[in-house]
Structures are given as C-alpha cells and as structure tokens.
Length: 271
Ligand SMILES: [Zn+2]
Image 1: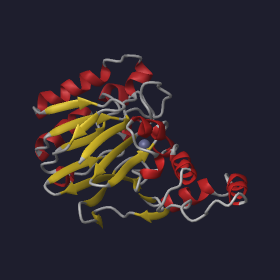
Image 2: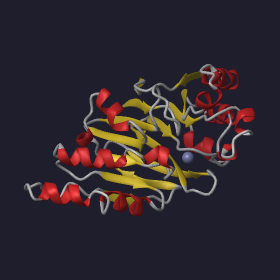
Image 3: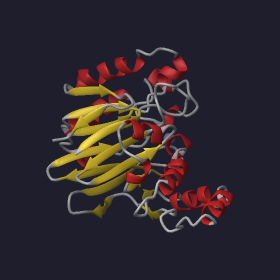
Image 4: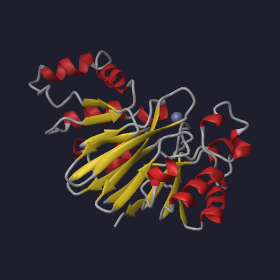
C-alpha cells in the first residue's frame, strides 16, 4: 500500500500547498480521499491520471475539500474512463455530485455527445456513508468511517485496513473519545492540524478544529506508528512558515513517535 499526500493545504490559495487530497494505491486500485484545489494536477505529478481513480472518498462538503471534483470527473470522462468513478461521502454528497455535472456543464456534455462520445462513464456512482461502521469490503482492503465534530457540517474520518496494515485519513474536526480505539495501532494517522490553540482562538472557525495537544493524546493512546499533520492553513494567515514544524514538535514531545509535516507529493510506503 502506497500513500501519497496530494494536497497539504486548506482554503487559502497557497502556491506550494494544494487543497486537501490524498491518494492510496492498494494492489491495482487507486483510492483518493478528498479532492481540493489542484488535486488532479498533483495526482498527475504522482504519475496517476484522473481516469485511473477507482474510488473517491469525501470527508465533508466544505469547498476546499471538493472544489476539484468536477475536473476529476470531466477529465476522467474525456480521457476515456472504462468504469464509472465511485464517490463516497456524507449526507449531501449525492446532491453535490449531481448538481456539479448538470446543469453547469450541459452545453459541454451535449457538444461531446454530438461527436459520438459515450455518456455512460461520465456520471459517478454515489454512495452516501453513515459512519460508525465498515461500509466497503473488498478482497484486498476494508474501509470504515466515523464522524467528527466539525461545526454544523457532517464530516467523516476514514480508516483503511489492508491485511495487517492500517491507515487513518481524517477530514476536519474534533473526534470523540472512541477515536483512539478506531485508530488503534495504525501505520499512519494523517490528521488535520489547522493551528495552535492561540491561533484558533483568533479565527471565527477555530472551534471547528482539533488542537496539536489533542492530536498528540490520540496518537499516544492509539499507539499509532506515525503521524502526518495536514490542512496546514496557519502559515497562510500568520505568514510564519515555521508554524507547522513547531506544532509537529509539540506533538512529538507527547507522542514520542515520528511526526511528519505534510508536503504536496510526499510519499509514504505502508508495509
Ligand atoms: Zn472543513
């Protein structure tokens, strides 16, 4: 299993950090988690075409996590996708996916159909996920989800189990007290870390996010092997590029294990 951090940033238009997106390659399947700004471009940089993505898992419907979905869908269709993309996400995902295809791109679709394009692989298959259970079981892997508290928007964290390997990919928000058990022994915990408590207090959305101290406590209790912090928006607002490294150091001090600061294109081989 290979993990690639595609987009380590968040809402701001940081030229060095794309919007939230991750890729996991398991055997012959390509899974993608969130699809923020520049996700498709960063996917191409990782050597994977839009048409190769089998399944896309959305954590929630804040724009920074989903704004590249139309590009992924249409570029995959134009490049000849041989099977429909499957998109998983919380309540509201079906509406979102249907509405970004038609009507906004109806003229494009009609124009291509008039040139003989096959409509079939265009429309993704959408599966809305409840959380708190395993919702996908394949020969090589299983995927489960739990909800996190992210203000008033339904938000999921995903767990991928492949053989004896485990990867956790969060969206945004604060998990509940069962989360360390959900993450138990994970090889990688890729978790949002939007800012320090002092910084979050100054932001109107600050209460929607987890603190470095809580990440450290989870990682320690769950005995994960490695943490990667992502959704790195603090430096965009404070102008201090050392902030993520300071947060990583703070987490390392309590957790005691390896803490990576996400970068676009960062690859982690999982077993
Ligand atoms: Zn969010």
